[in-house]
Length: 582
Ligand SMILES: [Zn+2]
Image (tube, rainbow, N blue to C red):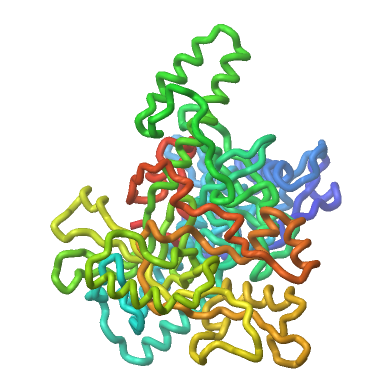
């Protein structure tokens, strides 16, 4: 943490700041020369760096109306400013010590100030540092980790109890068949360890907001934006499972790049997942029946800028931004883009190329293998005769389903299918589908439990499933999950209603959010009411389905999230370190 200390140990004009945490490595034998106290330029430059970095810290984390001038009381331990003397006698300065390695350096105090800000925050996760060196450091650590893994990750083997009806069944990819048991054990351990760390771009498996997601944010009215970065709030101790309220969210407003709207920082209480509201239709006649890509935004902006009245110009500009944000959101919602390719191969008949991914930006949301998603009970599409049989089987299996049951798929595979005959850009014509077991949350009677085998243990389904059940049982006044109190005759459980089924993109409605997390963000008062009453309602009723929020013009695969956002945002979107779009 940074502490402003006594005035007298850093000269008369500046208050000293001590950065007490350091990741400096104190490398021996660095390039260039150490600074000399007898060289005026060196002394001046050292002070310049210390003043600029301290000024940044004061700006970002100091009290608002603090008029004092600050200076670092030295660089964090293990960092060293060094000097290169040019042929013409000029001097260049570099700050060494970052864990990336002895050759890595910061060239300006502004570059290092970003890292210093991270050092004084509570984050110990380098992927949350906005400096230039940390992303490379994280990337390398990941590459090192990957090298110790088998070359490609085989998808989980399918027990295929329920044959898939639609879309097409695929054979497992032809990558890395069986590994010797020790390697598998090691892999399982590593996967488990990785499960405990939040996946890149998230702050945990059960939190609501993720980097790159489309959200609503409150800015007098509700506006649309994209999450660029998530950073811990200063001064709040982070622990595994810290909720969304522990973080700040940097948002790029949706609109059009040519409007150059500045990014802003919000907290989760002024944000909503995209699927909580519907996007209103355009209010400008000339934009009706158009899409974001067909509108000539430049011409519209030019026309507005010709208005002689500056007030009208400003209003016109805001109107344009609003319309662009609505159309942009619909366009983004109608795309998907993949990341973290795990394996690929072809179907048995060679007709389809199959890629298995670790995650996908599905319209507004980020979905990863291991996430729960909301899906329809019966897949859509026009089934063949054989598929009809499968559907009938499925229908009879699901006959016992309450009509309002919310089906949740635990995603174990994210597949992209492309006709093998297509290459290059044509690969954009791809089909996305999800595979996994199907569950519903049910309030069951201890007297009449369902057949054995249909109730999985919450632990094995991952954090979101476990957290949801624990909450439901804790809140339900009649619930008796431990069997201790005979008066309480019910308990909440996940009940499996399908094994390793497939759902096409159009049949996935969106992420399943843990009820408490979602309602704490979108309607804390309602959540408290449910807790008091001892019964919660089904939170998905408060969400739209993805298909209902789009422009009706399906755009399909985009090569990366940046491409999916297109000109609807004015800043360059970068996926967090550790995620590889492909
Ligand atoms: Zn850094």
